[in-house]
Length: 284
Image (cartoon, rainbow, N blue to C red):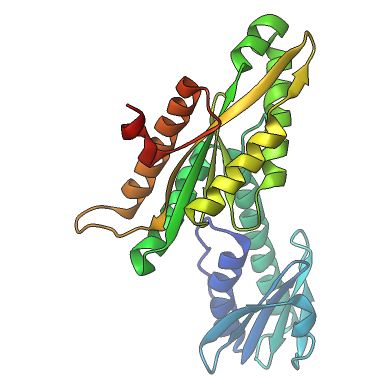
């Protein structure tokens, strides 16, 4: 007779699978257990006390005694060895199915909460979460981080002259061009209003080239009434960050965003395309 299994806390699907599999394997007395879904698989080896992710196709190469289909989660529970009977295995599969369905709903809710509904880009909240991730890497090995702060020009004019629908369209078009410019590993988000932030691990010169490419595809966006939207950019960072004792790494990265924002403001005042944060004092 199976005992009551501990339900997992709210977390992603892969983390949920890693949480439930050791408990399922123990309840079934199985040597090995696996949750195989369409996009990933997690395998738990009870004897070695090891758990790992792998491609769903590779799971079939391992010997399994039992396969129980999952319902809503669209996958299967696989077991090797064990003493559970058919009814108990069905109960374990239902437990996994409910846990994974809840995890998928949680992932969808987090994705919706982290996305800007207008442009589809990550929003400011998602940017802050990414800052925390980068901060952890900086704390471990002094990772190089660079921030490109992009500020649209004439956006208010589009809003005032053509209305908010035209302004929304201007933001969507600018966001799409930003998305096309960044490479894999770069992170682009809508910071607020007509401002966007690119977080990248490029060196300063590469970040400058990225900024120039971004501005070249945004500048000249034509809208009804002959109004042209352009942009300017501020850049901060590009060196390896050394975190001082007592300072949280995320605070250092947040200060880079503030510096890049100030640099973009300076670029707008100087009527130039791009300003590095280090040039502000000289310009003043």
